[in-house]
Image (cartoon, rainbow, N blue to C red; front, side):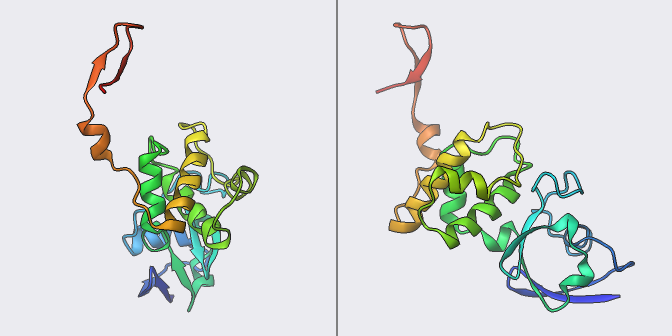
Length: 179
């Protein structure tokens, strides 16, 4: 069965073997869109979140056959640069497995509400699980992304962290950035 759709703004077609093949499988195995992660395949973790006609869905729960003529946006096509920059600048990325789904969910949230509060952020990310960050840095990143998107200020870059020398502190035997 041939299914035609738009993926990240471009026409895409896939030959699927069975009508129940998941959009996740089609994106990764047939279309080479590896940014969408395969974690649980049960709709529990949110790692495979994509936008389907503008709505966030778990790609593992959507049959590709349902996507005929529809628009799919993955982490590549759905996430504005300020969102990615804010996640990096705030240290909201660790192992990276949940990151694509989180980024898509955050992009969707910020498209609907340019200045969400913590409760709105937590609700929007309720379907995305992260075992590494503890969510505080993710919430900080959402606020930073909202600010970046509202005024166009570029996010701090990793170059700042790389070029800032780290020296031992005599006061507490810890390391801290040099003045």
